[in-house]
Amino acid sequence: MTIQPTQLKTQPLSRDFMLARATARDAAFDGVFLTCVRTTGIYCLPSCRARTPKPANVEHAPTPQEARARGFRPCKRCRPDDRYAGRDQDREALLVALAAVRAGTTPVADVASFAAAAGCGATKLLLLCRRHLHRAPADVLLQARLERARELLATTRARVLDVALDSGFPGSSAFHQNFRAHFGVSPRAYRALLGASGFALRLPPDHPTAACLAHHARDPASVSERSDGRTLHVALDGGNRALLLSLEHRGGTVAARVVAADGKPPGAAMMAAAHAAAARMLRLDCDPAAGERVLARDAALRPLLRRGRGLRPWLMASAFDCLSFAILGQQVHVGFARQLRRDLAQRCGVRVGELYAPPPATAVATLDVADLLAMHSSRAKAEAVLAAARAVAAGDLDLDALAAGSAEVAAARLQQQRGIGPWTAQYVLLRGLGFLDCVPIGDSALASAAERVWSLPARPDGPDLARRCAQFAPHRSLLTFYLWRSFADAAAESAAAIRTMRAPTRSTTSVPSASASRSSGLLRSRAK
Image 1 (tube, rainbow, N blue to C red):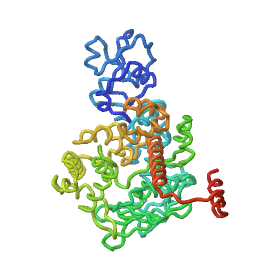
Image 2: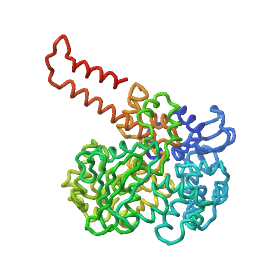
Image 3: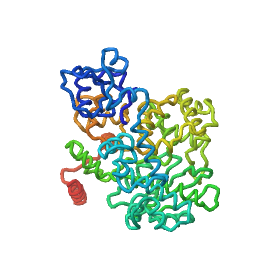
C-alpha cells in the first residue's frame, strides 16, 4: 500500500476527494476513512467492490466506532472492522497459498489453481496480489517457482529437469527461459558459479546498464561503491565474510568478479550472496514494459520515458543498508545523509581493499548513541538507527520476510519501529524490499519534480501528490524513479547554467575562426 493511514489522518481530506477515492476503489485509503451509505445503513472501506452509491447518499466517518455511533453497521463484503483491527482473512489466505507454492507443498499449475488455493476467484486474486504483492498473479507465481528452483539448485544435486518439474514448471524449455531472464544465467551456469569466483549475467535488450551502474556510484565520495568507467566496485557484507563485487559492463552482459576480504576462495555461500546482490542491483526481476505503457498515457511523462526508456526502480544491494540510510536521511540534505552513511561504514564496516562494506545490523547494534553523535547524527536518529539494528539483529524485524510478504504488513511493521514514519517506510519498501507500487509521499525532491513535470502552480502537498500518483497504480515505484530522475536532470542543468554564468568571458572577434565555425556546426548537429 502506498499511503499509510498515519500519514493522512492529520491532514483534512475534502468530501470530493474521498468520494473520488472510493469511486476509484483505492485500497491505499483503507484505514483513512469510511464510506457510510444512508440508504443501506452500511459503512464500507474505500476499496469495497459493492456498487458505487450516489454521492447524495454518502457521508464519511474516520473510524468504525464513529460510524456505528451514527447508526451504521459494517459491510459484510469488505469487512471494515477487520481492517481497522488489523485482521485480513483474504490477505492471510493469499500468503498461506504463496508460502505453499514456495515450499513446493501444494501443486499449483496455473493462476486458476493459485486462486483456488487462496480460496477466491481469479478477479479477486488479481486485486489481492496487486494490493499486497504489487505484482500480477502470474508474475507472483513465476517468481515463487524461480525462488524455489534457485534454492534447489544450490542445496541439492538433483538433475536440472527434476528441479524444473519440482518447482512447478511444465518442462525444461520454459524453465530455462524464465530462469535466465530473472537471474541472468542458465540453471547450470548458476550451479557452476557457486564454485567459481566470477560469473557473467546476460541482460535484457532494453536494460540501461550504464545508467544503472552510474546510479549506484552517484555518490562520488562513497566508501562502499566506486566506479572507474565501465566497472562498478561494490563492497558488501556477505554474511560472515565481507566481499568486493566488481561489475563490468560488456555490451549485453555484465561480468562479475568476487574477491573475499580475507583473501580466501569465496565459496558457495559468498557466491550465492554476490549473485543475488548483482541481480538485485541490476533489477533483473523487473520488466518495466507494462509500467511504461501506463505512464505513457500521461503526455507530461512521455518526454521522461523517451529519455529513460528501460529504467527500473533500482534497489540498494542491502536491505538493512537501505533502512539505516533512510533513517539517517530523514529531514536532511542528501549530501549530509551520504556523509553519515560513509561514517557508519568506516566506523563498523569491514574494509575490503580501498572500500568498506556497509555494516550488517549485528555490527551496528553493538554501537551506542555516543558513537553516532560523534558522527554528527542527531540523538533521535541515533536512537532510531540503533533500535532498528537491534531489532534486525535479534530477528524481531525480519527484512527478508517482509520483502516476501505483504507490502501493507511490511509498511505497518516498519512504522512500529521507533523513528520510522510513512516516508521512511515507503522508501525502504521501494529501495530495500523491492515492492513495485510505492510512493514516498513527503519527499521534497519528488514533490518538486511533480510540480515541474506537471506544470503545477505550486509544489503539491501530500494528499494532492497521492491523488496524482494514484492513477498510475500498480506502477508507482517506476513513476517515483522517473520523477526523481527528472529532478536530478533539472538540478544538473541548473548547476551547468550557473557554471556557465560564472565562467570568465573571452574576447571575441566579429568574424569567427574556421575551427569555431566547425565546432558550432557540430554542436548544432548534435542538438538535432
